[in-house]
Image (cartoon, rainbow, N blue to C red; front, top):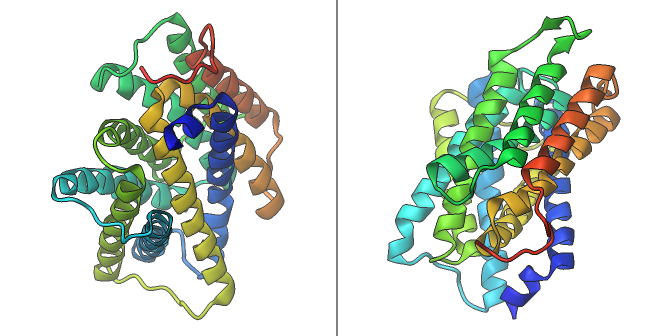
Length: 311
């Protein structure tokens, strides 16, 4: 019954849109969290504590929800330990170490748009490393358009290239980790429960990030009610979106789900403009969004793009 539900085209569209909308909201809320907790952009230790607590809480939420749905405590089996460890390294520790530190050194708009390039990197990893996908002219064209979008985003008046390694560069590194995690999710969810993997990899990765941050001297003022509300919302974003996305990936190819990632930069830019009052509609950002959106379309272009059978 569950498999049939997650294979219906309309359900796939609605779930994927919901997930990408949640992810698109993450960048401005993370930067809002930095402000509420008085975390400076160079305070890497406290940034890691903030990220670690978010994902530890996300793991707890997923485990509780999964246990409630299955009417039993959701526990990992012995053979799944390796999968949980690998996913915690790539999906939580690697991806969000780079993402949180990078986002502290770039704008929410830039962070949201670079996050949208994850579809292209995921395709390359799936095709060249894991052999899940087959490259063709449409997909190569899409990748080129996507990275042209990143270049345009960093152009001052389309004349000079402006690249921040600590900002944009680290956010891009986070997308590389995310792309490997997507292919690992595709692999491991064929053998293990997607909800269980999501919950425990978040919990393990979150604990490790928190400990690293504390050992580096980081701290967080947990008496800040507004900050805690932001932290809880971000935990919900991770718990809900990644669990649902993992289920979709267990039934469908990476590229066919990846088309919906075009909504991440769109939502991120809009919310960064509303929440952070950042400039969202300068010509270079508009053109970057156009290039990235067309790139995602070409990457995922199929004769029947809503035929969601796994390959």
